[in-house]
Every structure is written in structure tokens, then in C-alpha cells.
Image: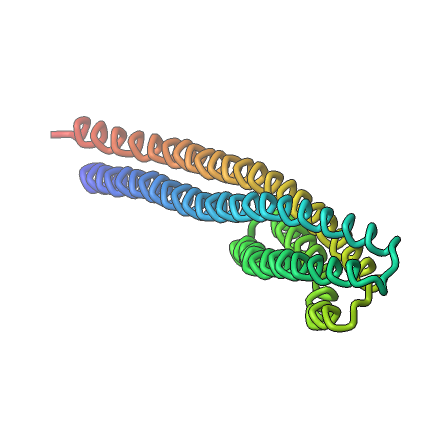
Length: 255
């Protein structure tokens, strides 16, 4: 009976130690895979933020050029408005201003079009964060940046609809309406510039918070692995004790 008890204890101890070791190994395997997945997702998000910010920076540079052109056109239109619109010289000047205004307006319109994929990309990023169970504030921030861009580009939509009207002004020489349209264009470009700056600020916040969320998740993932190791190591120590008890039981069996 002593022999059977000792052998059983040894076998249970060996199996228990192996199971504890397997549990520790499985815990670290899951931790490494989870940390790697979180890091890859965070890197994808960060790369998306970098690309979006680069696109916004290029749009900002183009918008600055457009604003300078619109300011020049507006100043010229306001100067002409102060003169006699019926004078042949003024009529010719109005036509030249229109020729300069339309391409600049088209460039502003093109910038607005180029920002729509960026806005869509930010919303996709927000959806990814939500699907992965990430920080809700990150998703909300991405959507806020997208909304900011949409609001900025919407400021130019009215002007888009009036491009044909602007071009038709070359025939009717409506100086007063030209002044109004140039002022609207300048105001729209200013809102666009403000929207771009706001969106870039939101992206900077998103990048920072994504990095913080990644580091926090990785930390707690490995902390859980350490805790798992401690628990199963304690259990394994008990199995080693059982193994040792079984050996002593066999060693002390009567002849």
C-alpha cells in the first residue's frame, strides 16, 4: 500500500508539474501574441495618422496659396466696384479679374475634394478602434476630426454651385456680385484653413493617445502573464512537494 501511494503521488506530481509548466507557457504565448497584435494595430493607426497629417499639411500649403490669390482678386474687385462699372476700361478689368478668379476658385474646390478621402479615412480609423474594443475617446476624436474637415469643406460647397454663375459674370459684368463672391470665397478659404488646423490638432492628440493606449495595454498584458506565472509556479511548487513526498514514501517502505 505504501508503494502504491508513493507511486501515485510521484505520477500526480509529475503530471501536475507538467500541467503547471504548460499553463505558464500558454500564458506567455497568449501575452506575446496579444502584445504583438496590439502593437501592429497601433502601428497601423499611427501610420494612418501620419499619412493623414501629411495630406493635411499639403492641403494647408495649397490653401495658403489659394487664400493669397483670393485676397488679391477680392482687393481688385473691391477697387473696381468703387469705379464706374459702365466704363469700358472697368468692364475689361472686371473680365480680367474673373479670368483670374475662376482658376483660383477651382483650385480651392480641388483642395476640398482632396480632403474628403482623408475625412473618410478618419472615420474608418474610428470604426477600427471601436471594433477592436479600443478607447472610445480615440474613436470619438477621429470622428471629431472628420467632422471638422467636413464642416470646413462644406464652406466651399456653396461656391462650387455658383462656379457657373461666376463664369457667366464675364458676360453681364456684374461687378457688385463679383465682389460678393470673392468675399465669400475668401471667407470659405479661411474656414477651410481653420478646419485644417483643427483637424491636425485632433490628429496629434489621437497619435499621442494611441501610443499611450498601446503602452498601457502591452504593460497590463505582460503583467497578467507575470501574475499567471506566479500562480502556476505556486501550484507547481505544490506538485513538486507531492512528488517529493511520494519519493520519500517509496524510500521508507518496509523491506
